[in-house]
Image 1: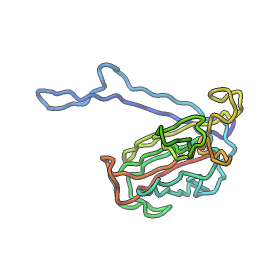
Image 2: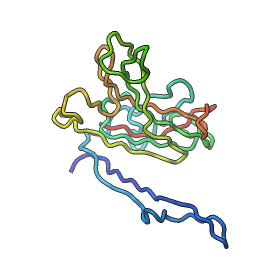
Image 3: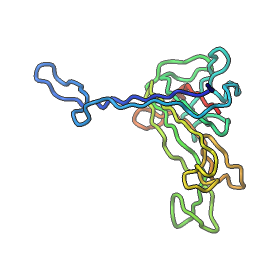
Length: 213
């Protein structure tokens, strides 16, 4: 036996049909006919004893909500690096304090993966081997969380022989800072609050999270 997270996911494909008697009715999508899901354990974890504000939970269930601010690039999830497993939830409440939820909120939380990549004046976006180049932040959306929604990201497998392209250093782990001169290969996770339509929000949402290694 070992420390680990048991992660499960369930998806119910819904379609809405018109019923002459009762109006619109939700059913399981006829093209799919069933709910989808899976369950399994994360890799073995070291422990659950990281600092409260960085792990999200501490001794005896003490919580530390994250303030997913609505300005700038949002809020970095954790300074733990790397994270072997991450859980992130939009609580559906305005952030009040690290331990107390504020008023009910209808705002959404965008979860992104932030990294530095090379850009030049003639080509926007991510370019390779441009010299001279300018290192610029890029944000890749992981999830758009409605109130009450959550995601879990299992990570791990750090040896070079198990990297995505079999070359050490080219696969960034969850919540990781490469540490070289330009921080190429960062994979930092940020959360930012938006109004439901994707416009600017006026308050930050409280995010419940767990980041463990």
